[in-house]
Length: 95
Image 1: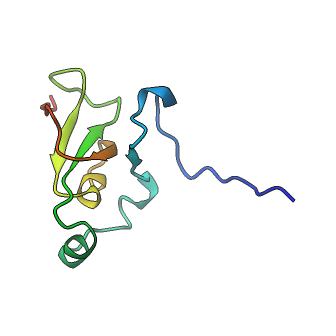
Image 2: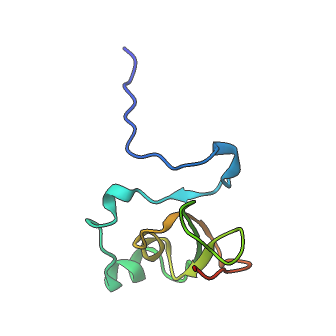
């Protein structure tokens, strides 16, 4: 018996354009899952991430990104589609 696949969410764009180490933010959990200080300290202490904005975001430069304290914080922002570990090399302003 084959396992049934369930698609929870989709992100706009070609799969080959995303980094292999990208962690995608589930948009269905943005309003439900809130980051608590205790959770952040316990699970993601000192794990800065670079959050990448969705394709609908207008930025000053082509690659829209911002550094966050951790993945939980990054995914709380509606414009963030995914993040990678480490601070952003170059951040952009949203216009």
